[in-house]
Amino acid sequence: MSRALLLALLLVLGAVPAAHAIGDPNEALPDPRQEARAVEIGKQLRCLVCQNESIEDSGADLARDLRHIVRQQVAAGRSDTEIINWLVARYGNFVRLRPPFEASTLLLWGSPVLALAVGGAAVVIARGRRPPPPPPLDAAEQARLKALLDT
Image (cartoon, rainbow, N blue to C red):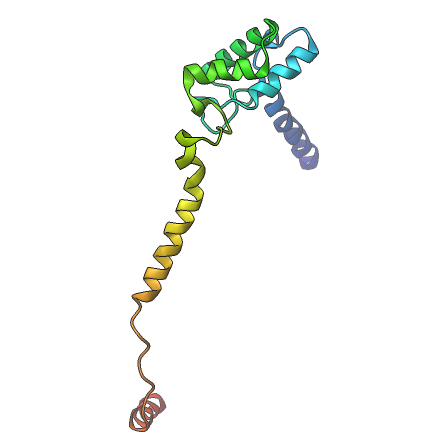
């Protein structure tokens, strides 16, 4: 009985992400090619509320509004580049999940390398500040240690 319940729970949970992507079936475009194009464009755009999800994966109201705008522009016959440029003009490069490599995004693209360099420098500095190891015990100290341990 518990195995059937677990299977049912997994099936229900597996359907949640698919149902979450577009909350309203009326949101989808009637032409499957245009809808597929709108989904591909939406996967390239960041939800400005969630910030770690595309507008296609987000359930936020702003993401829904952006999906609607993308679908309107796809239906109006605009190209992918025109649609993305229109959104970038309003929200900046942050709306892209993968911003272009240019002078204004240099810090964004360079930050992983910068973080590794800072971390590496911190390790080198920390290792350089360690005190030297103590000198080995001489014969008298070893005899005294042995006497202490034997008691």
